[in-house]
Length: 105
Figure (cartoon, helix red, strand yellow):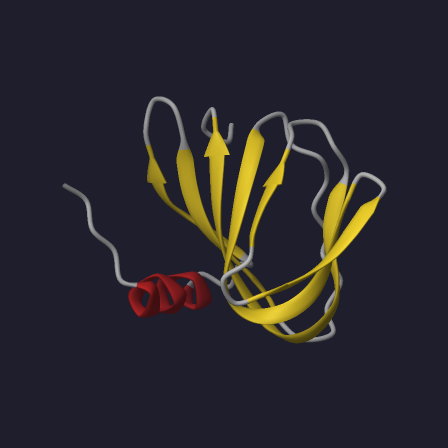
């Protein structure tokens, strides 16, 4: 079994000065913590993998393709591989668990 604590992942991510921390990688998936602070621009580009976002904390809008939705704690969003997407109008520091399948390369 592999078990993680969100506060420890957040501390590790912050210590490495990055917005993204991959903390689990297996044959069919990878999982990471993505952090975007209030007011910043999300720089990500489309990925070759399917993604699932689970919002742990914060508030923002998320555009996937030509659809936009508001996200906040507890939101879960599926993003198909290759589809442009980004968080924007981040009104509260955003912390998101990201599951990639297959693993992010």
